[in-house]
Image 1: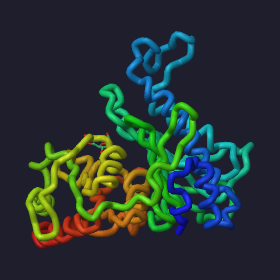
Image 2 (image 1 turned 180 degrees about the vertical axis):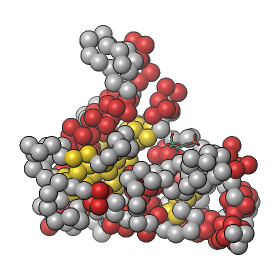
Image 3 (image 1 turned 90 degrees about the vertical axis):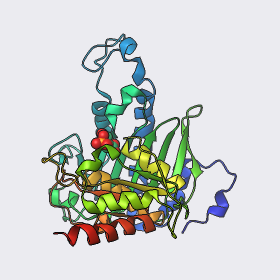
Image 4 (image 1 turned 60 degrees about the vertical axis):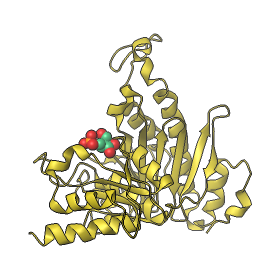
Length: 346
Ligand code: P6P
């Protein structure tokens, strides 16, 4: 575990911190380090656009030409292309996969292949942008499992337990990058004056006294009895905790981040509202699994209501999964109540 005493009160850039952490991965020969650098650069580039999103009528909106005569891209398309272009030629990846692309994204033949695959949701919650609500990028990095040649679906469909790194970028009142390489969770805040991410939240851990629960209560009529009972339990003072307040932004990264700092639980359960989404709305490979990796690194836990998210063997690139993530005690209680009320009823 990195000694955080050495960083107290110092100006530590993300580059310096990642390099220090690389010592834990001598065999990575810097490839993983450089992928994290590239994600930090992508964050700066995307942030430069999200902070001006509200100026579409002046700068032009997606699909039109702006005052500079450039084609204005939808921000999620811009985010997708930024992450792709920063990673397609580096020789560090065997393939990529994105929420925006149906199939895995091959590395162009003219470039070297690497030993990692990068899965990402380039701009989650982008529908919130025009209301100036925080949005985020989520990324997951696996070591490839195939021996050589272009990366395959098998390289991307690995359980979260195998992740070598994961993180998110939060484009909010400030831009933050939070990541883990399995050696704790660390948060960096972008100082726009110098264009650097500076270590602001070393070794993040869920506070022992949780404050919030985060769920779209508008779907309550469509929940199972177990989820209904769980929500009622969260609201009450119990021997384990005080009754929690409801905070729900409707932007996954923002809700996850607030609960990581304040203590709490986010859940998007399966519901009967949309027959096309029987397994909930959120995606396993590039939303639930990376956040579950971070949650466990921060002393928390993530479940689909029955098992650890990190233990789920993916079967499809864009498969959806119910997600409960936050303080371990809160998430395990969800599993207990769902087991009693729902499986007992099956
Ligand atoms: P609902 C945003 O569209 C998103 O994918 C996540 O960021 C967020 O947690 C969820 O959907 C919100 O969904 O159904 O509550 O609007």
